[in-house]
Structure formats: C-alpha cells, structure tokens
Length: 186
Image (cartoon, rainbow, N blue to C red; front, top):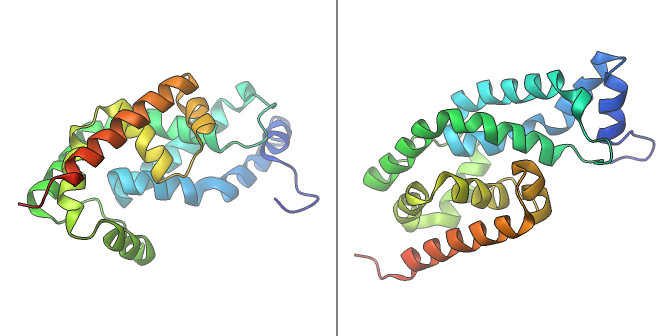
C-alpha cells in the first residue's frame, strides 16, 4: 500500500457515509478475485461471480470487522461461498479435463495459461482428476492457498473455520495429490 493511502478497513468504513469509496476496494482486489474464480470455474462464470462478490461485499460492508486492515480474506470468503453454487460446473470441468486433457475452464490470460502448462505439464489430467475427487472443503482450502496465495490464517478467516481445520484439510489434499502424482505414468 502506498504511503498516505487508506487501508482497506478505513476505505470500507468511509464507504458507509460515502458509498463511492467502496470502488477503491474493487480497484484494489477485483483482478485477484477474478483470477482465483476464473481458475476455478472459467472466465465467463468468474465475471458474474466477481460482480456478485463485490455487490455482496458492498451490501454487507457495515458488518466488516474494521480490525482487519486487509479485505482480501473477507472477499475471498464471499467469493468462495458464491462459488459453492457453481460446484457442479466446477466438478464437471475437472472431470472433463481428467478424461480429455483439454481444460474447459482455462482462462484467456496467456501468462496464466503458460504458467499452468509449465507447472502441470503432462500431469494435468492426473492433477485434475485428483482435484475432482477432493471434497469441496478440501478443494477450497487447497485452491485458496495455491491459486489465491492466501496464508493459513487468511484462509481460516475467509472460510470462517479454525486454523487447525485449514491445516488438516490442506494436509489431506496435499497427501492425495502426492499419492496420485508419485504413481508411475500409465
């Protein structure tokens, strides 16, 4: 944050009397929230979910805990809750990737696309299959950690779960990924 710029809590507080100020929260975080959602459900659905995330956040901004100077965990929590409405689409996309090797949820962002291909390489089908078999709760924790780059504490805040639950879900998800990826290719 630049010197002299209000933190997220101050901006949200100011938006209670000057609603236009909430646009600063959108400007700061919309791209990251959209990127996270697009990697989970594709760009078209992510556009709608990003809009819904910020609209919901605006509506409930009076309940925001202003002790939290960073609104990202709060926004990711809202986004993840909205995402649950779209879980069937997400699971279907991972299953299609596991079957075909073609990612139906790929974003139009070339840099993300190249990075994903370099990282996953030929194992993309296996990874997608494991992601599809994770529970929704394990997948949420894993993808908030890996794609949204939230800390354990931020994930706990975003999902409103204890820190120990974040650790155990992430551990289970990682174990499943490692088990699947340690097997030789067929």
